[in-house]
Amino acid sequence: MTLVIAGERSGVGKTTVTLALLAALARCHPGQVQTFKVGPDYIDPMFHQFVTGRPGRNLDPVLTSEAYVKWCFQKHSQTANYALIEGVMGLFDGATGAHDWASTAHIARLLNLPILLVVNCSSTSRSLAAIVHGYTSFDRRLKFAGVVLNRVASDRHLELLQAALAPLNIPILGVLRRQVEISIPDRHLGLIPTAELPQLHATIDRLAEIGAQNFDWSQLESLLTAAELSGLTDDPTAMATLPVERSPSAPPLRLGVARDRAFSFYYADNFDWLRAAGFELVEWSPLSDRTLPEQICGLYFGGGFPEVFAAELSENGAVRQAVQAAIAAGMPTYAECGGLMYLCTHLIDFEVHSYPMVGSLPAIAQMGARLTLGYRQATVQQATPLLTIGDVVWGHEFHHSRLDVHPEAPIFSLRNYDGTQSSTEGWRSPQLHASYLHLHFGDNWQCWRGGAIAVGNISKVALSAHIQDNYIPESEDERFLIKGLDSGASHFGVTVPHSASSRCASTFPNPCSQAGSGI
Image (cartoon, rainbow, N blue to C red):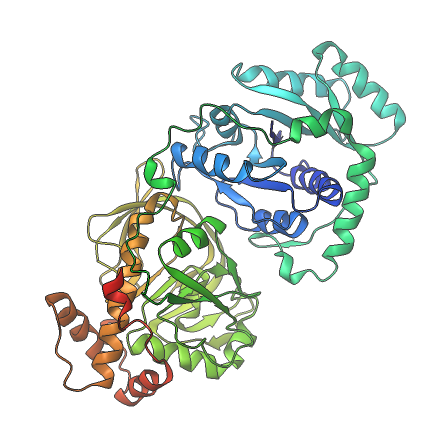
């Protein structure tokens, strides 16, 4: 069985309880605990992985599908001895207020798993029984394993709570006292990521002690034991293995993944799908590396906090110039949110300090108080290396920045989850896809199979065309690509000198000249 950790609402201590459970369990069973997170959040799974040593997985039926959620849960829980799902917001809070789709309750019901409800006991006693009764009776299809009482003030307070809950016959599986406060710092987009917290090991050690002392492990350990689940095998066959036809002799497609304190928002599943599509992921740091990795065929910039590290990113002029030159020379590039901001000419932070960035996009990214947040249905209006016109994908926006210039030919036409028109956005060229939209590749693996082909083909065309003046295109697609590449960044009103392209061609040897035909 696996437990779903749910809160009555945000802020009741759901993440603290989750981490205390994980820390105590992982201390006794290292490497044997698999975690999941409901929804699109990137940061909570980072904490899960920090504690357990295994990548946390997101379960989001909007970004993927119910079938994919089932498949993902089954695939990863069956390789662990213990499994736990951390919910999102309040138990019944989903994509809209009209129903609970994409809520913690939805996932618990979909996977037929029991819920451990975390409740805030501050300034209440008997009233807590009404709250718990409401949650446990609101949807009779749900199963509840018990409750965790958080922020209990004293022994007397606990006695009152126990007496109030007794008629409900719901087990109390944990009690955390008010003075047992573990503080994990946060900022404008939630918790501060693990890579920025040098004292996190000490915090997790303390949480492990709290978890060992304050939970009823005689009941919890069996509830957290991962078991073979029935009824979850009705998923599309295509999800089990990615049908990419690669020649055994084809060299890997080396994809440069920007990953450091500034860029850390990546789904573990996305990395899995990229590897399955034939990519070798080569991590590098825009903060500290002075050059791009050798022999890469493409670049991948995830989201993160470039605004927090804008000064450091700006000071690393060598790698900014290398990125700009690579994109100008035709390096296929995919950038999300923070990655999009990094590719702009400048980034203006919350204190209105302006920092030069890569300059591949003729726009300035500026931080502001307004939060853009929510699921988006995106219809592709302009083809990119990964998507074709008419494709429809679901993504998620979560940012405090805006661009001062809107693209003349945006990638996406966006609709909100409720179907209302949102906006258009996204910058593209034959070799570039840059957007605020975060995408999960799980139900869009066809795009990334095509992306592997595109990376091989575009790299071959781009670098060969710049190296060899007499290069003859092999297809209409290649002629289109060369036409776009020859114009440099003029798609965005920016001109890149040919000398920069020549430097790039000699800087990045092309391992993909045969890879395109081997896929």
